[in-house]
Structures are given as structure tokens and as C-alpha cells.
Length: 73
Image (cartoon, rainbow, N blue to C red):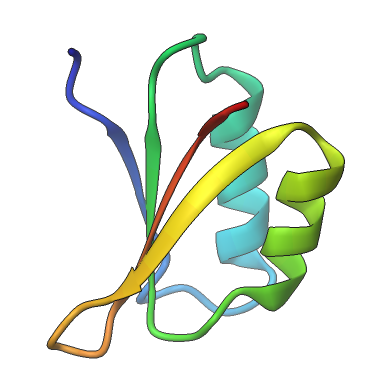
């Protein structure tokens, strides 16, 4: 399995992380995963993902980073 692509939005200002994530998803090959790293819970992103046929798994890491793993459903 290839290494996942990563969007590290921890140093970005809104809406940059959402825009970077959507751009990365546009070119995500089937079967691959995108990992998004943020210091906030990206609630708007979750609804965009559901509306566009993506599934995700989110977890909070010990350093306070939200790690969201996204792939096509």
C-alpha cells in the first residue's frame, strides 16, 4: 500500500486547510488515503466528505492534533 498523502494544516489559517484538503482529494487515486492534520475539529469538512462519497476516521493524538484519514467510499 502506498504511503498516504498528508495535508498538514496545523500552521494554516482558515479556510486554507479545507481548500488544501479538497484540492488533494480531487487527485486522490482510488484505494489511496489522505491524512489531514489539524489542531481543530474540522466539522465543515466532515459534511463535505459525506456529501461527496468519502469515508473518514478521525482521532485525537496526544499532542492535540486531530488526525483525519480520508478515502473514497
